[in-house]
Length: 280
Image (cartoon, rainbow, N blue to C red):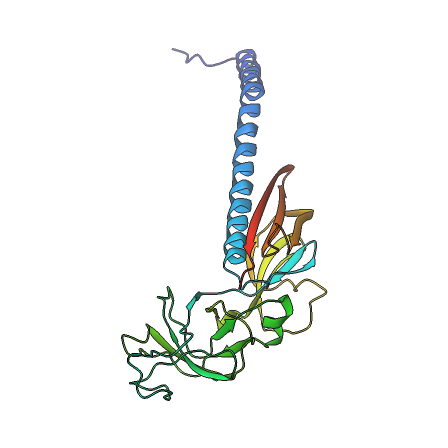
């Protein structure tokens, strides 16, 4: 008995039919697949841009008042903070006897802006207790003051706990004359490990770069170093505009941010505005 197989004609017919079916399926499925891939790409870009805007907004809102500097349309600089609060402005006339007395375990430590300060008590709680070598900033009225160092002092020893009636922390700093005439009673803490921050768009990447205090105004963006905040930045895709006197009181600045990301023909543009409280 002879075994019967497929003829050449039958195989060719099957191949033609299979090709027709594959082409038909491709015509209908490819747009759907391409649409899914494009949607996923746009979602990834949107998520990265939104995360970058949130990171910048957080740093801007917590920056030292009046410390935001516009370097160019594609970069800006600020001085970050990790804590802050209110300092004791006068001695405890009830428990400090006799007056005046030297700050000690039985005497409070007020911060007097009319003379050099080496130690003061903190009246309010701080989310983060500063460490040795961190910086105390008081009364930053002008953008250049904190960079030049006229109103900041470095913490010389680890903060201690004073008498319960004196406050929550006692901070010792290098002898510094803080701005005379400032009566706000507030201070902020700048970490020594991150004295200033640059946000710079360089070569299609948005960087967050830590730098040291510099009295001279930066004229160029930081180099392509530091933490990567976003990639796939389109050419001229970063626009940062800072207005230091937004509002009637001239103590409310505003940073306008526009970020455009692009990848494989897909692009997203997000814009965001951040109000800056410049009241020291």
